[in-house]
Image 1 (cartoon, rainbow, N blue to C red):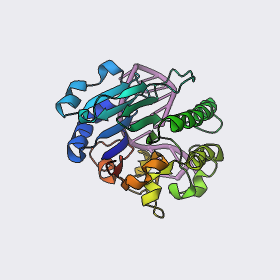
Image 2 (cartoon, protein in one colour; image 1 turned 90 degrees about the vertical axis):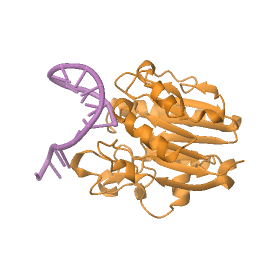
Image 3 (tube, rainbow, N blue to C red; image 1 turned 180 degrees about the vertical axis):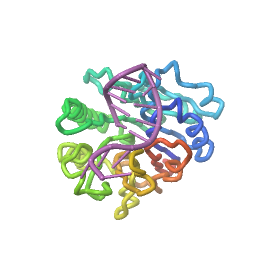
Image 4 (tube, chains in turn purple, brown; image 1 turned 120 degrees about the vertical axis):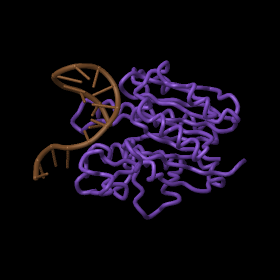
Length: 259
DNA sequence: ATGGTCGCTTAGCGA
């Protein structure tokens, strides 16, 4: 079973690439972020023609997330489009249960800078998320948590740690949340299979970031401990980042075995 | 070189 996450930076612009990627990799589930589209604007027919169904939590201009899935998984249940109890006009969450698998797809707040009001919002958002993960873990042994987290968990996930020291995406406040999820028993699957090497998932459009490999690892797939025996492989799809008119993020893939 | 590029909406914002 293949699961993947991809911040597409406009599903309108990137739909042809998403369709091509689906045909190439045939994932069971693809979580996408930054649709920048309302639910009505998403070309569901094109996805269906490619053999996929989709759950959308869209928003005009900003944010928006979706779960694109193989209908052979059956009808998803317990669909959630908000962190329960957390008021948020921004569309950043889509979660659903597929059989025995609980999947949460997130577009975490960027935060802009540590002195921005958006960073306060990010902290409130992460506080609510951490509380919610505890609840989801208690209800769903087989939990997958994926998306654009806008957190580089350690200095090994940053091309220039000195330049990013204390900056947004790299603060102790953000990293402590990520560390807390690991303490709670979630597994950082990319690091599980790639303990040493850098494996960036995002490169700034500016300053030829990708060509110079000046990246950050901010897109993640975390799974609960119960799924550890089934883990087979995780990797970053750098090829898609090198396509014509790419998203600034690469897809991240996780392969795992059947029950 | 202390900037740079995208996407959205149409001058400026968000990333």
